[in-house]
Length: 479
Ligand SMILES: *Cc1c(COP(=O)(O)O)cnc(C)c1O
Image (cartoon, rainbow, N blue to C red; front, side):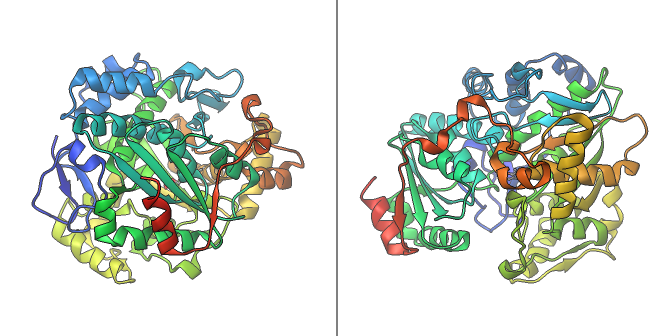
């Protein structure tokens, strides 16, 4: 499988060439030259596979430059019930992403958050950790991952990379801005290759430092600085698998259809759903849910894509969806405009200059119905009411992001054909967002027994002023 850039750069790299990199040289995002088409016979054969075997079957279509036996081993080591061990009592952890039905056969949660950091980022990041280790070892190289996090991504990256020989992680977080649980999750890691840096500032200050260090080409090359951000193609590819798994769990035969509702931020998760559908998975609807940061909902309703300024970005109680522009959205628009890279380059010229684009009058947007998307938004009041209603009606506790999904799924239920099961992707467990759970339910969230008292473990973190040079020195002294 060869990969192309959404903006038309001539190179056609393979999977391992783009695994460790970020954007294409022209600023575009990588996508497969074409989406593998899944035959009915394949779909029938896949229905009974374990998660690891299904992951291998799907990923081997996108990863053709790793020997099959090695890729199989990587999938087997990644998708185990020991790693994804936090399924609700009664749900089968061996399924890796079990469905928790709220209404049997009709309406359920696809549990994606049973991995080590209790958020769906683990589904892809654990695979990425094992792929990095494999490719770096084969090449005799090392990498130093530098990132900034407001919570979920940083911890998922650290738990995926901990103890890996060829990888070090330097993760910046805003001092005092994460929950006690999130801090404990990250800072209690004692692995030598994991370095936590708490910056006395906001998330944006941490992000700016990462950008400044990455823009220093000499430093970046000398210290082999890499990233694991949400535009990484391997992360999107790994996420395709659970749409198939969820489909098989919710249907009895491959003549049936399923609808998915996805709490969205950077459009990575739902982009994988779009690709699964393009491969031939019978998906009736992809329902995109946003919180108060509604740039994507606005696009699907109006055809206008207008990324917000940082100052226009709301700080909400579903913080992992607080984005001002959706970094994976360019992948979908590439398909929407008929895979025309000149058109994408032109549209993103406006976006990259801080502007917007409007497709409402275009023939492309007239075809948007072919892609099965609908969208809606939620708010703090909406998610609190939803957490309460789901708990009262079904006895199930859900987190704030999943609550945005459930709220929008209810709002959009009329767009799902009768008899088609609807799965909301559960993107985090409630233990991560205790404050809003207390507000909604007047009680503490459920927490897996293994994580009781994690706030009391010794923490390993370096406190620093938001100073680019100090961060560079810190890295240079440790590699
Ligand atoms: C990252 C994240 C999201 C948003 O996912 P995207 O792939 O960025 O759209 C939603 N919920 C939670 C809990 C997350 O961590």
